[in-house]
Amino acid sequence: MLGDLIAALLVTGAFTGLAYALGMVSRGGALGGFVVGVVTYTCLGPRGFAVLALFVVGGSALTRLGYRSKQSRGVAQSCGGRRGARNALANCGVALLCALLAAILPSEIFAAAFVASLGAAFADTAESEVGQIARRTPRLVTNLRKVPPGTDGAVSMPGTLAGLAAAGITVLLGLALGLVGGPGAALLVTCAAFLGTVADSLLGALAPRAGNELTNVLCTLVAAGLVLAFA
Image (cartoon, rainbow, N blue to C red; front, side, top):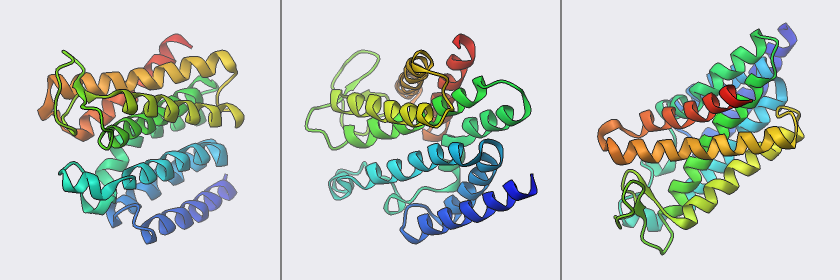
């Protein structure tokens, strides 16, 4: 156990330090990510950390995609695209809880829920970041009315396809690493991750004052909850 903790501290420290140096996260984001990474590595080992790293690196890359165009339209992530501590905890808090439960309880279902929650977070980021640079005008998820890019609850076909791809990539990695039980479970986890983003969009459309952090928590919570309910 001590060896796992030391490995978690070393690996996570190196990863968050590099992420900060590359401008992927703020100081607060590095600290929040360090906590998330250490707990994830300690509970699920390098397999869980690999899935977490996929979300962090992939999400950062998508945030930087077409950043100048997003910035000119006022929809870009603030602070040059660097994620803060609140963002890290909002996106990864549910995954953190699933990782802890996977370590405490003798059931593999929590590992699958962990993958689903991060898949939903990655899919939500992909839908938002790709949708904001797509040429097609997004539509509000509740009534399909055309709205400006960046509107809470807005969806687009390019963004939706990017979200499905992000969820699928996350689940495939989880399947390859043994965190997801098999093809049937992988399909369930992918669907759960995507439905998490649907819940995110619905809350954004119905309660735009809820804020990005709250919708992110709901997105990941719905994904993990669906896996736990139907696995």
